[in-house]
Image 1 (cartoon, rainbow, N blue to C red):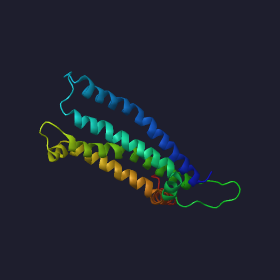
Image 2 (cartoon, rainbow, N blue to C red; image 1 turned 45 degrees about the vertical axis):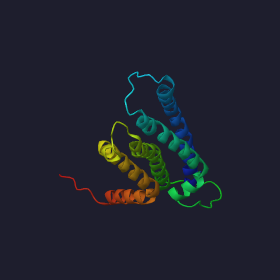
Image 3 (tube, rainbow, N blue to C red; image 1 turned 180 degrees about the horizontal axis):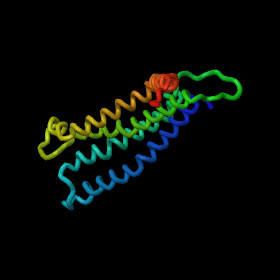
Image 4 (cartoon, helix red, strand yellow; image 1 turned 90 degrees about the horizontal axis):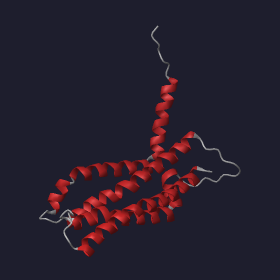
Amino acid sequence: MTKHEIATLACRLLGIYLVIQAIPQMGYWISLVLTKWLLSTPIGIPEPVSYVLVQHGAVPITLMLIGAIFVWKFAPRLATAMVGPVEDTEGPTRLGARDLSIAAFSVLGLFILSEAVPKFLGILIGNFFMDNGYSYANGLRLHGVQLGIELIRVSIGFYLVFGAVRLTGWLSGIREVAMTEPVERPG
């Protein structure tokens, strides 16, 4: 397999993983909807239920399913963006540590994005639906730390996906320098 084929396969596996991750969240979201609209009795549900429905249900589930379809459908294109163009090779191919590192960092970045983007947008969009007199600005203040953490995770994910070649080159350079410099031992 080439690094492009490995990255394509990993993208498709990630698409399957996203669908599997969305299933338990659908159950949680459906139970909230049923509790809110079918029972219509106060049974200890937190007051800003519409906020909870949006932030923890509709937005993440929808984004995960859209992301799964996108990653599956565009896996070859994503692989090209992650590890470079398809190489024309005849016969068996041999992958080096550099090629595997590039594919691994890129896939790790996609994984981080698949978890961080739905959570980030769920918090951001959920603030529009906060009840109990919370304004959008108050909601952002309440969830600013969460938004900041998820923004950092999104940034790291994007860097790993689109900067894997550069990161691998940098780490290889550090390793080569460390291996070529003589080590002085006290003696």
